[in-house]
Length: 279
Image (cartoon, rainbow, N blue to C red; front, side, top):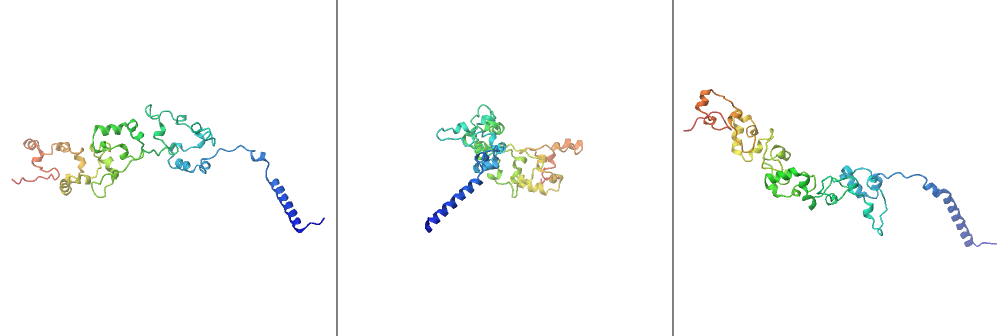
């Protein structure tokens, strides 16, 4: 039998295809070999290949939730829209946490709306209304010592839970170049800002903002008082100390009996050398 050229080419292609299939079949392992080993649990990085946003949440703001995904998620890829079994599959906060905020605050997701970003908690209405439940100290201070801060809601300053703003967000400095990090530690407790408490090393330039005339006189005084920080005498804002706090009987008994008030002679405590009266 003589084949035409077209027939020969068809036969040649058929033989080639059969050879390729046979060769491919030899290279492919049997099905049993594909499933011969037990799979290793996925690492968080491997989970992140598909769940990229959740991985980054955990990486950046996961806090104590930065552990293996399987510790919370026991079942994978088992969600069925037909069964609507999302709530059954998702882990519950109570699986690990009891009632960390007491009996009054039990709805975790009202504040912790993203369990993968455990440390990043937005200031929801529920959270704002519950601040005093955990932070009773600041709440009591704001109520006991009224100030403009008392009229603000917590999120006016703390727009994210645990965020501590700089005083510069609302206030101007007392003097040019003042560092705001010292406002609370040196003078103004933030939740009772009018109850001024001076630190021993509070910068005297702060006093100059309101008491400029006294500050200039004190800073130019040749007396020993000119070398003493304001807060050494004025331990509380607005307080006027008695000379006897530092000076005990510096003169003779007779002189003290004749002039019991020190300022009769030392007329200006900010520039205390004796000055003669103009009268």
